[in-house]
Amino acid sequence: MGEAYELINYLYRAEVAARNSDFLSYANGNLASRSWSTRKSSMTRTSIRTSDAQEAFVITARDPATQRVINRL
Image (cartoon, rainbow, N blue to C red; front, side, top):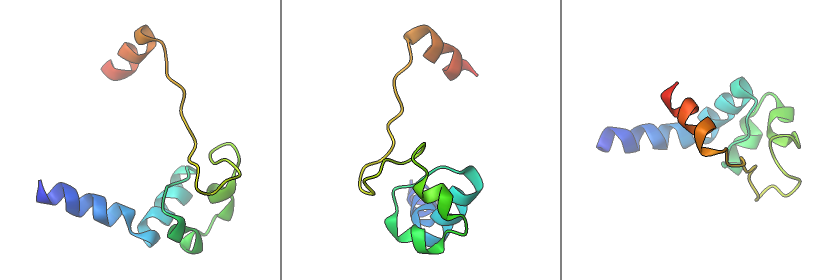
């Protein structure tokens, strides 16, 4: 269990979170990572983040049949 916490702490470090966001084009919840990002657009795109920096993008729920297929994949 300790290793899991170490991984989470590592991934949440600002410079690591910024690299992940740059690579995935997906905003993260670590506001400190904005200064580390090389692709500022990945941190501010409205398709992945709302205009309020404190509010995260919300993924809508899928119907149960579709979610079962996704889980199996």
